[in-house]
Image (cartoon, rainbow, N blue to C red):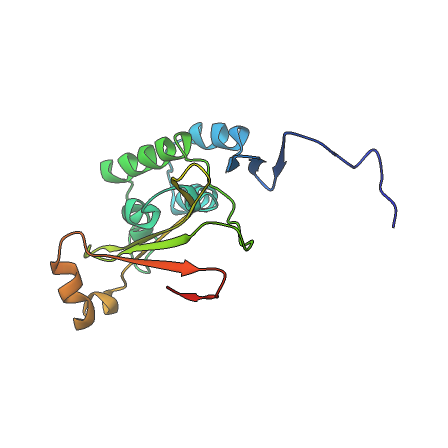
Length: 186
């Protein structure tokens, strides 16, 4: 195996990889890609709305509650739905753009033996959907987010009795702490 000097970048403070700017602090959306999203015009068709969401969904891991925020746009994609870009959709588009501009730096999880704890927090108290964050404690003693996830309840899931009590309870959150050295839940 040989290393090409022209293709190699050794000792760089950061690098752009598939739309992410990665450095010693973690990863964030690449500023050029975010500028492109900020310049996106108002969708005039279902195809344009899908194109916008398709680009933004790539960076969903940086947006807390992405699916819940984007729900009005997702509802446009349902079968038999007539395309109508409402003020609510325009507000959602603005919120998503703002969230990407203010996106946090996501940490890279450290699975080494001396690494600090990893936490998974899940919030399922809304009738619209759920949200989750995967985080890890770092040397500064603070919890740093590694990834955000979210989803919208389907019509069938909204009917589940299992979730009715959880939705009725405010601030219902599960926190799971992982002990990496034993590979089991604490």
